[in-house]
Image 1 (cartoon, one colour):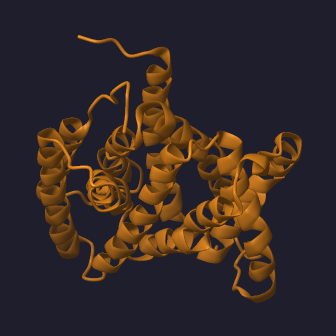
Image 2 (tube, rainbow, N blue to C red; image 1 turned 180 degrees about the vertical axis):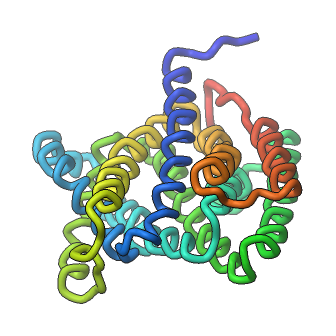
Length: 297
């Protein structure tokens, strides 16, 4: 049996750390609906507050020097307001657990599709089996969610899937382009802050002035600093060290953790069928995970 190199160990550690970061983010984003803040406020926090840290770092490291203009444009769009607003809108219709299921749970399937369509890389038997288990569990969860969470839950699920395609594209390009942490922060935070914040201030509805202080601080800290700084750095590191497929597969553990936290913290209903489906999805995750070979295509 081969042992993992130190770089792979840190890659796996980063990927599993983001599982817990992402799971708590699902909870925080779900309770944002009761804070009085609009989805446009949350998006402004994500880019604006993170930029307070990111701008000085980017001015020092000058990460744009290693990027082509097209790369800056593509990464900035993928991590931009379209992606974020889809995700925040999804929480209006579907419970927090569904965010984990349909954003993170389907990532291995999207990763396989990208590999086939873009690179003509066929998945292995384990990947296909894992993806099949994940797909079956996602269908069961969507059907059960419509019965227990309301008939409009499918709208949130669809928005989460759209977000998953954006996110899977980011993970893929992080690996292919060997993006560094500061390059990701520059594109995902600073560029989008420059483009989005003036539009938010001038034209978009806001509940910032009326929001209670405690929920406002919670959203400011978590939305502003955790996803766009800690999250993007960890994911970029994981994608570079253990590969896009392994990173996507490990992040599929978020549905189980997110569902558990949703039930414990928010009191969201998890039926026996949903619980079994999340268990099946986790098995699919563990089946899909494979070691990155030393020489990759």
